[in-house]
Image 1: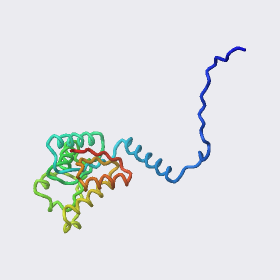
Image 2: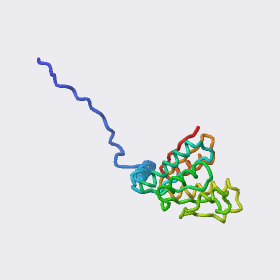
Image 3: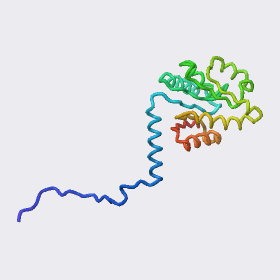
Image 4: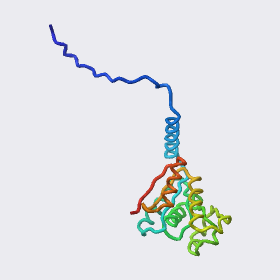
Length: 187
């Protein structure tokens, strides 16, 4: 009897049970992924940049270049006030590219900002103040401000250290709100 030299095909068994049903959990995951992909592929979006005030000048320069590039691509940059660090660098970069594409949300009022922050905000067309938070501590007002910034964006870029509880909470909030989150750890 002659041997059969045809290659054998391996078969894979695919269970057919429940292929037509999608669980509630799976449905939410698919929706979240679709929303994240849409945000990434959107041509012009609102990108929030928040982070630490304690940054070396080289990190500030990188943030400034990033904000500049984001605005030049047609995006709007949303940040808060700050005389140094992440927010100040984001403001400088966005202002260099197109002041109309910058939105600054302050934790309190312009009058409560240090004079160097007030000076930096000259020429910013879109500033949101919160006189209703004037009696709060800056830390409490800043936490609320971070949430407001995140609520307005599609994507969050955060510059933080591993010990930054407030910023970790902000990134977690953004993830819970299904925003695209990019965290840069500085330590």
